[in-house]
Length: 134
Image (cartoon, rainbow, N blue to C red; front, side, top):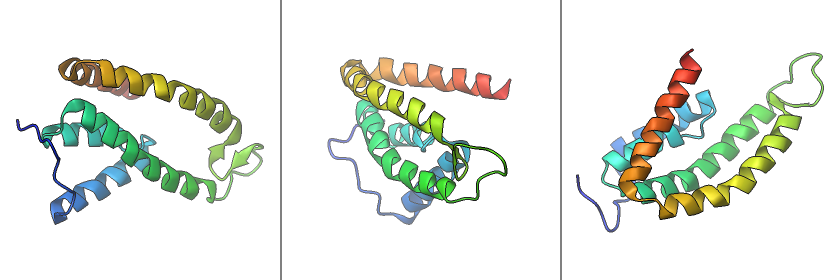
């Protein structure tokens, strides 16, 4: 598999269709697209660290757009503390915790060997899939 020093820009129709599909699927399952984008970038020749970093950066606008959509959907009747379909206390608590953990995760990902990072990502996806399926 090729390792690009400068990955090609996402300009082809195929790449745009893949990007749209990743955004759609990531928003449907609440993943921000990273579970789809990292493997796609890695298979496209990106070094694993670069795939993870790029996915994180791409995930931000995807997450913002998805959040805005869910926030402006009518709240369920009779449920307090909702912002559209978003449970506001969870947004605050989990959002804050995630923001505090993100720099540590980014530092760790930048220091781990690319092959080990790839294996760890794959194992994490399997664990997540098993937990969701059962």
